[in-house]
Image (cartoon, rainbow, N blue to C red; front, top):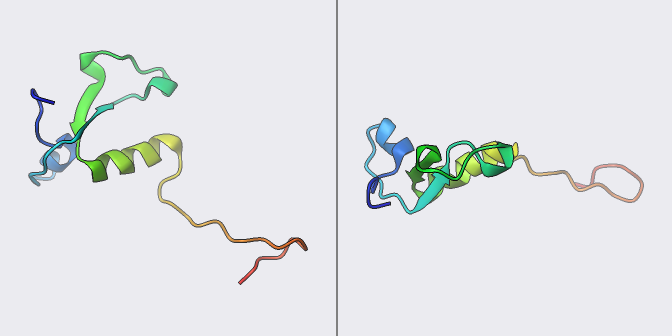
Length: 74
């Protein structure tokens, strides 16, 4: 964090935001390595978005509630 105090994703868009968390560029669960070359520092918002993309849950879509009869509720 000391070497990269600003969010890398924000900085690429000419936005100055403090980095608050180190992030694995290639997630460990996708084969990324726990080494300096695979780390970038991000703000919370950018980290949350990247994590959701890594997990395949971005953009977040709310699941419809389904009743016992199999039909959508609401």
